Image (cartoon, rainbow, N blue to C red; front, side):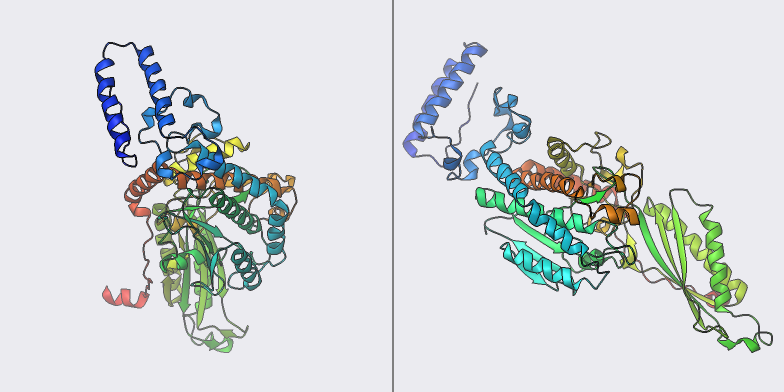
Length: 533
């Protein structure tokens, strides 16, 4: 048996002595039993420890050593005794020193637990300012000020007037960047029925834990970016920020959100907003009998009824919702232009595209019947992809959540393309789905434990009431603690980062059809089609 010892940072004399011992050891081990070899190994390690004056293994001294001396070069060298340690360190000690993990994780947990009252105030502040998309000025100002006090470099009005970027970089040596997000806009007429008050509270709690861990042990290196992402409920704020490069510097993104049940990798709809405009001739109702037809109002109603018939034919898991947004101003004039807005949802982009084409047929049929002109607009900012959860990161979160008593419906962590079994209930849509095709991320759902939320759904009035209850706080803190532990392990463990990136790259190729595509404005003109024929 040949033993490999790292001699790069040791004195020359000590290196030569060790190399001679290695040669002698190689010659004498051939005739020894396995038991004797193990005893020799232990004796050798004790001698090495004495030569290096490292008998004091307290946590205080361990902080003074560079992390490179603590990292094990080969996971196979883990001893039998090491594999019998507690669950808290068994998964992580194969790749980095358990003292570093113990110091950072315990410091993070203690910090989050000691700030529960302050964190609850963050939730209360958001609830007190239920501002809708693009109007989140008060809570934007509040969060920017809060993060500035927590040693962050804050860029307010980042890309969007009510967006921000807060960066925490305690050490310039790091080359790993993790991202967190804050969502704080409300739903018009429903308040914070999505629970953005709790998700933002969880984000700040997670950051507090990471920040404290980095202060407790300087060997935990990394940059943390917190993005404030407005207009998530209405105008897809993250998609605009994605286009502007807000997520380019992140190696991974971590977020959680409240729900009525725990889900490791909840499935989200793909969605598309379609704007349909009909153009006819504006006239007074006294002239309708003289020159009938070309009535944009009638075309809108026909299109709407066609879509209702279509919705009965699509798969039950797909949704078609439509409103007639604009159909004249006064009752005695036929409008020249009308507008409908469709919201289409489907589990996959393939199904979504199929429904979109049939909605075009509905509009064309209405235009043909009324001799009007129709235009279809597919805004690329209003197309949401499903969330591609990274199963490597999801497994780490699951392990940490389990230690805190959080369990999920299934043990699976196969999340690529949302094929996890605990996703039988298709969730809502999110602009974070588009980001998941740019950055490896996880977006678990945590149950808030309130009776009001048990038998309802996110975005309901009952859920809006539940997220304001004090009972939801302890579940939010648990989820934030598990997320902080996940981020710390990601920063400490090279293998987690590499495997997460490798899986993301493979998913990127496998899900090529599901990637964000720039959808050009699609204009269909019936008159032009007739001329072509």
